[in-house]
Length: 540
Image (cartoon, rainbow, N blue to C red; front, side, top):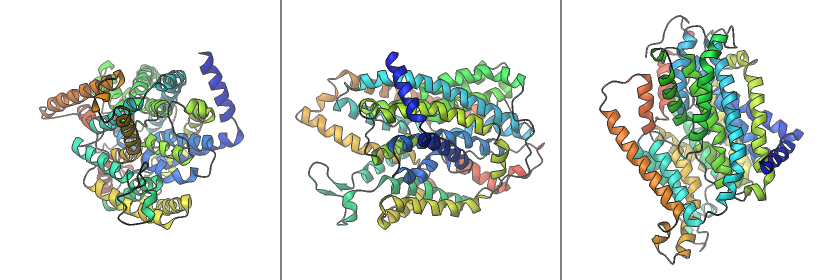
């Protein structure tokens, strides 16, 4: 306890440095603003802004990226509620009750309760992170290479099995990411691998080029084909703060969502999508008016938003302590740490306490700033949604290309970015989830390094993975999850019809991250529900 409080005190001394406070403010503001753009979401936001952190101090850079992450989670809820355009898969559940509330003229209270719930959920998760992280880092220090290999492999497989869309496609995407990661020189023998005689490829493919290409250029190409959002109509917000009745109805939902989001966030493959679905389902079962869910239940909206933001904060626990990113966004932040020559893991708290404790302390500050930004400035953010997507797309494209070039002043990186933009477009077109790809790219070198070390320790015997308790427990856990998912998928496939939540429950087997694009194309077909009469319900 004393060690944690001392660490937090040091972290706040780092976070309250003027330049770091500025980075946190920039992070949460930019994250909120870019989260407003339907179709981008937090993964694309981090990917696009990753080059900006290259020349910053490590602590400030990661504070800013963390702020962008949970800031974009706040901002992404605004188009989900007002336009029924979810920026990412987790925001799909937000549309179930958020959009009906907006159609009923209660857009203000809907946005207000999400801001308050997100703040409370994030704060509770950060408190849990503060007290669990040091202990887990201490335990993680005794983890050996066989344990790390199985842990990284389990994280990748869990994301494939409980992540988005087809399991086979997710595994294929992860395998492609691993293949791209091994391009370059072998770290042990210096032999060229998959370079095809190209000298530029001997240094490997840079993470910024891969990330910006997949999630930036690829997303723009995909949205251009499906149709950009037309912009918000003349929606007027009156009251922003929820009423006393709204708060009474939502307060327990916020508490339950905070706890659910925290624990699901630290599981590889959990993240916002699963936490949103689970919290929504739990709240529907606790509700005295379950039939109202899907028609404008403010407690359902509060639960899913609270859980989503709680999970986005607790997800930093495995990254900072084990060095294993549990979701695609944290994989990109992992890459940002590598750009700063910092390797996340058990030694981070000792070798770079300013980063470890500074980032945790900055989350307290960032959540307060987000609350102060989101409640009084919601009206301004809504006005920004009136800018059509076709105007924003060229600006985003120019920022993406300039950012990639600025990292190493390399036109080859720009070429690779364009190549991976085309790859990302085709993967999205054929309904492949991009999350496992980037996680495979990040975890590939970790898997290879610890596998080789394990083989050296065991003289080439695979028995080393079955003779230690940690790998056995992890493999048993993975087996249980796989069996449960198979049984659940069969049970769901026997149901001929589904309502909103049943469809979300099925998403535990995989919410399609293309859902945002599908919702976007549907909205493009009607060219903007926001231009309709607020009293008219949009057809399902």
